Length: 222
Ligand code: DX5
Ligand code: ZN
Image 1 (cartoon, helix red, strand yellow):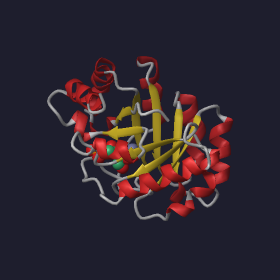
Image 2: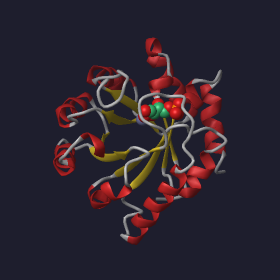
Image 3: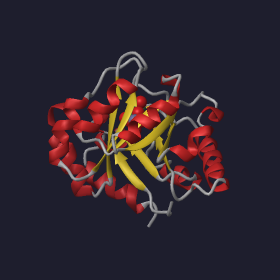
Image 4: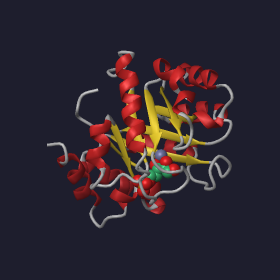
């Protein structure tokens, strides 16, 4: 990918009673994507957003809707999220015994496909799928909650994945997204390691001026 990174504000940290305002802030700040954290209270100990919310967001924005499914049995939710208007659907390698079938299912809906990995899962588990996906989502916190601290070892994992993509000439085809604990002070380190897309929840919606914060993220690489 080019050195231009994309910012994907996570609406998990926005006011759920006023998601329109969060979308407007993303528009005004010029964020590229909208990151939607789907949690089922089984794969992770939290319960959040389902397809009806994505369906409601879809007509309100032209932004790329990036659905991060932290759910068991991901195959059951692929079609509902695709129909609701997701542009990309990411599932967790730890959530299925048959990643290839989930990848094929997501592709069959016409949406882009992402594969995600938790901080303690060996990277060798996702390596066989690098040439099958559009995006690799590297979790830099334990999935489940916003507002946690970035796990420092994540930077090395991003570098290793980037190197493998380079070796396989996939660097222009497969994006690396990093999710968890991304703040203004560590974003540059994550970009330099090879991230193409940065998710940020509390760093954006936890501030008094999310639009200004989005601008500050983009100024990091100017
Ligand atoms: C955590 C979610 C993240 C979360 C990030 O499981 O996948 O997307 O919203 O929040 P921050 O940026 O606050 O760590
Ligand atoms: Zn996420």
